[in-house]
Image 1 (cartoon, helix red, strand yellow):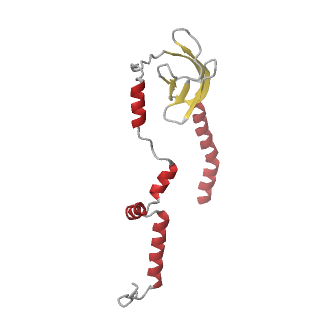
Image 2 (spheres, rainbow, N blue to C red):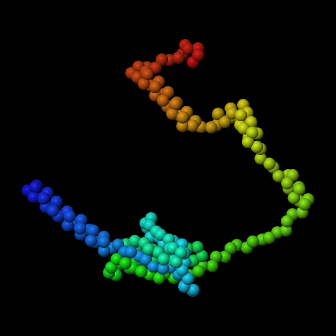
Length: 194
């Protein structure tokens, strides 16, 4: 009986895989078309064509032509600088594996914030500000300040141990614990160096 079930599964598996492949093959669509401006019907180059929900996309070429493989029911987003983004839903009711479109995009006006133009300062104002501007120390002076003994002591007290120091401390404590495994560690009461 077990052999019969095994033979049946071995014989039925290719048909099940073939049915799944046919179903997937019917849902794959080659989407291609041209992207143009809505007002003058000029081709728009380098429009981003992205499938929403997946890391899949392409760009239109210099003539605005694009081609991408998608699934039926996918949402395709067209976006370009200076144009309003547009989302297209690939219909899942048509038959066939190719779908062509002419996508028209509307220009999007971008308003920049106002720019205030001021007069240049006078020579006296410039000299005053230039002289009073604090100049940061050069690299050698910063290194001298960092090597100061009091600053090193303060940094040693406040900075946490880095990964190497922490690992060395942990390993030293583990070695101490394993060295005295099964017995009490010695008490350094009478050790004058402890």
